[in-house]
Length: 241
Image 1: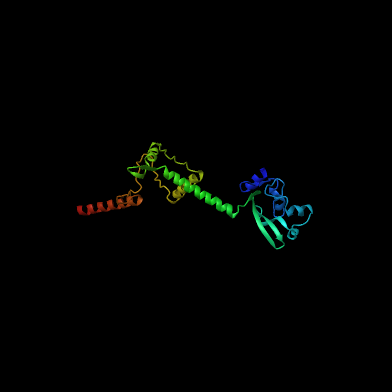
Image 2: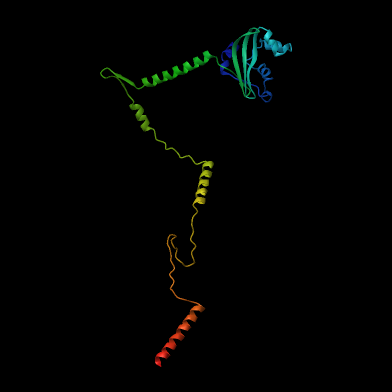
């Protein structure tokens, strides 16, 4: 009875032997699948006969009965094994497919099981929708049928509103903001105005124009002044005479 239960529930179980995973390849995957503790393997198959007689797998084509073959391999992660009933060297009937992903063996569901699961899921969703709708339906002999959602609205009002907490920024976001600020600083560097001690700060846009009194200074100016004074004295003496 226990064996029947396991066979009926093969779609819901998996099997793995971690000691085989490092050496799993196309040449060893059938040996891995034929482990004694694997519930998916049928020990009455022709593969066992070939193994006991130490023959190659090519001899399976000349036999009749259940056999396992490697249908597809995508090393080292995916292998697909098919269980089939061989009736002649050219005629076989597929019975089941098994796929091995990362060393874990699963049975692939057949089309009937997939359709059955999808239909049950759809029916369950429809039934849940009808049950939810019927919970809001009301009837009174004088009013007839109507929908009553007041209780649901009151429950929503009673529930305290939880404020959504702001998520802290990640390290990547902080580094990105720092990089943007540094880029802006390089494109638009701040301008500093050097000030002498004791002076008031001068606005940057203020234009200060130096106004200089026209005149001459230095040794050249003293010489010009002496010549002008001597000439003025000569003119005064001529007028006196």
